Image (cartoon, rainbow, N blue to C red):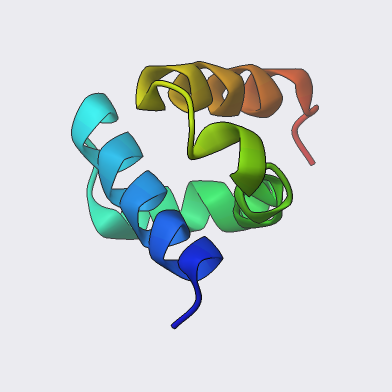
Amino acid sequence: MNKENKFLIFAVEYYRDKKNLTGRQVAKLFSKHDIYRMIIDNYFLYHIESPDNFVAEIDEAIASIPEK
């Protein structure tokens, strides 16, 4: 497994814990809003900063995407 995918797992678990969600809820939310791609695309930034920063950016991205 490459480092980006390892970080993706960490990010999902960190977000799940911070938001007190189930894994299923996070998977649905991330799939719906293409957050998995956002995390992978921003790996080089996210892996060196505080995890709370990527949680805030994920929340902003979700809030900025209109409901389908």
